[in-house]
Image (tube, rainbow, N blue to C red; front, top):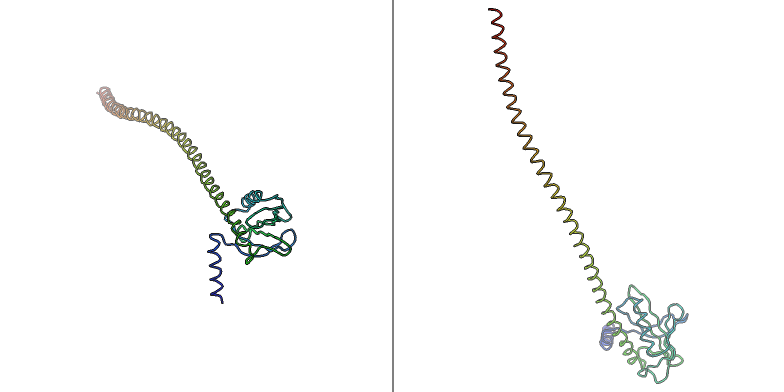
Length: 224
């Protein structure tokens, strides 16, 4: 039994192309509504704006209660020759954006799997999904451009900072070089003074020896 079930799901998915559209029920305008739903590859806020713009091509769009989006006097010739009211709702479900659509062509006549207009209704919905995916592609490219632009600004600021730091480093290096040169000159003076001090010490020691000798010679003269 499960083998035939999964085969039917596979065929159904292939028939609908990339988008998987399922029949179901949900609460819209405080009432359970039959219809069909799919998951969108876009954030909820973007999907809502895009969906409203899409519905405006076919009818008068208003916001309902609890996040409902209602299209009155909707005219879609591939689905019905007569205008109808379309109820829809976009919400987050398990980190995915869910779009539910309820189309009533008459009392208790809601389009679901097996309905004569189900194929036309899902084809109409897939047109919207294609538009949304294209818009999402543009948003992604715009985001990439924004990221690259932001990165460029960061790189420029980084380059300017590096120039400032290099200039500061250059000045610091020049200052250190000057101090090293001054220290080198000071060292040479200290070494020269040290050498002179050694010579002065030697001269003083020699003079002391001579003076001691002179003193001893003077003392001997007194004794004699």
